[in-house]
Image 1 (cartoon, one colour):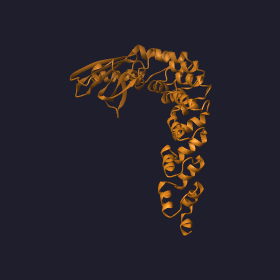
Image 2 (cartoon, rainbow, N blue to C red; image 1 turned 45 degrees about the vertical axis):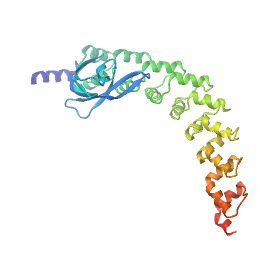
Image 3 (cartoon, helix red, strand yellow; image 1 turned 135 degrees about the horizontal axis):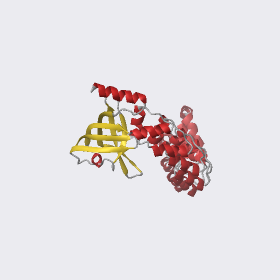
Length: 341
């Protein structure tokens, strides 16, 4: 047995064929995510024999249906046939959980072909490429698209879905030749070809990558832009649209203000109102207290200086009736002077 192990180690060191990998695995029915809004992927945690820590990856439900079935109870066996080799899983399932042992056998042809493509892979590389399903075709497609990625970038691209197809789609949308970090950033934040096209159709053309990512981070979607356009904010500056999303200026907010008589407001007015808490509810409170139709700048000052229903009620209780908006602000700032008077 020791001689076999020594022989395997020697082969692995020579680069001819990485050694097999063994260890344990576990999965939970409730630990999953979906792709394309339908395909279910089960998260599987692996621990290699002799290794420290764990690693995880996703298995499509179609590859291991028993993992996605809460009713599974008993022995479980399935094989993931990757281009880099085969991962055989054995174990048991019960009560929505499954665990057992795995064995990975590397593909000698894969290792050899990858070497000819410029990748001298270690045993760890082959194992990771198998987990993340980095095939020879995947690498070839990247090279055909003009990319020569190292092993870390190949894994990163696969984890985040920054595929050769995605890179080509970005080129077709006029984004040019992007580096892998830009492609990954776009995938993480949901900058898709459809998003770029929709923004272009709305008049926002040739946007840089960082701008596109910023729009996605803050939720400036084509739907949001169309909704704001319908309310009079057509061809609005992107900076204003980002501010709208950051501060909560929504179509619903604008409509509620219009119902109270506040129309044709500027982007700056709307943002200022949201920053200082001039909400439709606050405006109604002021109207009920006898201060309807107060201008926006005065309402903002009301909020800044604490003019509210309680202050108005207290002022009236002290005989200060029919105060103007400016008087209320002055009272809020210099209350003691008013009370002495």
